[in-house]
Length: 99
Ligand SMILES: [Zn+2]
Image (cartoon, protein in one colour):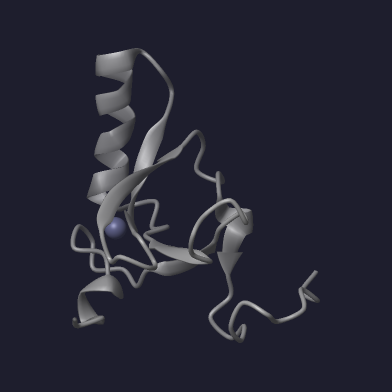
């Protein structure tokens, strides 16, 4: 298993951000593309509006445990951003002292 494919977005080439997950998940984080110019995300807005008539989109996401790709739904450009783990943060047990 190579981890190289889970570090950048195949749609825009942006480095993926680590996304902290709630405890209900069986793993602690996913990797997701938070580039607002990403074609996958930009296309998502019109796709969701046409199919479902909703103002929503999705971002490219890779499961942090299985490495499986799947879209993660977002309802605004800021959605889920508060769950992004800063690059310089140590692994999951770190105290959350960033403010
Ligand atoms: Zn992207």
